[in-house]
Length: 102
Image 1 (cartoon, helix red, strand yellow):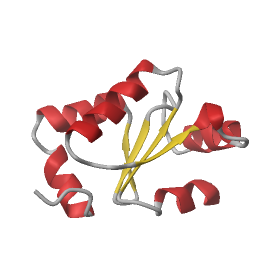
Image 2 (tube, one colour; image 1 turned 90 degrees about the vertical axis):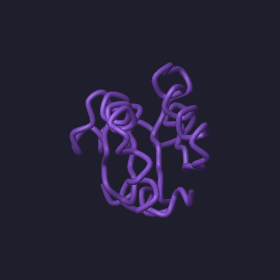
Image 3 (cartoon, rainbow, N blue to C red; image 1 turned 45 degrees about the vertical axis):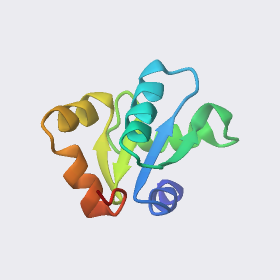
């Protein structure tokens, strides 16, 4: 858990992902299209990826990827992020976190 906390603090937006997950790709593309440059951690490429995935599960991420943190807080997975985007709440959240300036 401590490792995840440190990783989440490194940038305003942090995404835990897997290369093999199509929803992870969609979420990463959305942030890129919005002009946000998140820290992306590909769990299937990391030496301790399974440990991090277990920690994300304990935090309540189900499924564990994609897991999106904005401003150090867990937002959730693709359903939560897309819902925020469709409600026009995602951009203001990104601005408050310092990930987006316009």
